[in-house]
Amino acid sequence: MPDNGRKADTVTLTIDGREVTVPKGTSLLDAAGGLGIEVPHYCYHPGLSAPAQCRICLVEVEGAPKLQPSCVTMAQDGQVVHTESESATRMRKGVLEFYLVNHPLDCPICDMSGECKLQDYVFEEGRERGRGREPKRVFGRDDFGGDVLFYGDRCVMCTRCVRFMDEVARDPRLTVVERGSRAVIDTFFHEGLEGASYAGNVVDICPVGALVSKDFLHKARAWDLDHTPSVCPGCSQGCNIELHTRDNLVQRLKPRENQEVNGHWMCDYGRANYEWMNHPGRLKEPAVGRGDARRAADWQDALAMLYTRLSEAAGAGVRLVGSPFASNEALAALVGLGGEAGSVEESVYRSPRAPDEDPLPGFPTLVRRRDLAPNVDGAGILGFARTGGDDGAGGLDEVAGHDGIIVVLGDELGDQDEDFGANASLFVYLGTADSPGARNADFVLPVTTFAEEEGSFVNVQGRVQRYWQGLQAPGYARPAWLVLGALVGALRGDGTPASAEEAFERMTNGHAAFAGLTWDEVGDAGTRLEAAHA
Image (tube, rainbow, N blue to C red):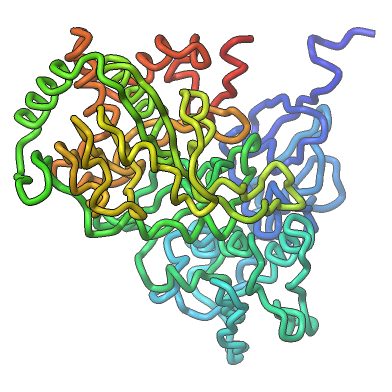
């Protein structure tokens, strides 16, 4: 039997006069979304079950006896769907009016203002004036525990939060109590969300301002925030996130969808791990000289003097200390510098570790990993060995007493005393903050954090993932891949990398594990290393 050119696993239908072919099992809501047509919805979320209870996503399907909920109505061959018909728009206007019967006029003080779907939908097609005469219901504010506050007056009873805790976290701590107009979300007795490792996601998926973050409460308005795609630095899972910034400060972290890594979610540990990016006590300018003889220098002079010292020390024993918080590009440049400066005797990194892993049961790909740093796997691939204890301390005794060249990148040496590196013929420290352990450094060079540069990490899956610059660097701090790349380029005679992309290309040329991989191929979703060699 002819298939009219269509595959058996797809269906073709018409939505608002436009033909679209989608896989079987696609809902009308998602099929419309593929055409750029947004069907209003509250209870539906792509990472949860669809109860079809909010009734605002109803659309007209020709031949159907009544309007159909687009979130649970599957696309069929030959269907003709209208999302903007008179009956569909009249229905939405009526449903929105019911939602506003009890919804408070909190927009001026609500954290969701500017991101609220109720606000958007009412603005687009709601009634110009309300007709309610009865007083609105009042539930007030409830502390759900952890970082979550609940404003019952604003709730539209979509039950996304309840379903997330039931289906994804599989830790049912929320439920609907009472009935009808008195229905409200509540916790079970005295057990709130305190200690629930993934509870912060209920704030992300709330379509209105009913669930808000205590940490972000009244901190900033949504329209004042810049959004930068990035990678969570909290552990080696490498969750895709957005940095939400204002006034050159990180205000919050939000998950960014990547079904191969973290789906729509992130853990609360990673979500709360951002204040260090805003720390004011940063190194801001290069310095040369040890101890009390140290003086400030500009980059040109500092690098010229360091180049001379490295050239004179050629062939000396080199010990490298990297960091799992540094980018692949920076670590590769550090390896390159060690090879140009002399004979590398040791390349190590230290990483804090959690006692155990913490998976998300309903999305088992996502796990808060034991390694509490984003680039442990990248450091290992580039030849660095783990040292020290699970607290990220110790393990540097041989480095501390080394009499050759020591280069430290990203490790603040917080557990080291002022004798660290005292015997070294050349001690170079590249970091974000000064410490007693860096007192004997001949060169102290300020570098940026991942939030202030472009670069890439390798997560626990062997997936290379890019991050983008969200903050301006303090003072004269520069990306480590740029500083080290300039030194390596000078020693090799092949120039300084002009961008993170060029630094990445140099890494792929020098390290077989990354060979064949391109910056564009990594993109904003990342790619597995083995894919580059397939």
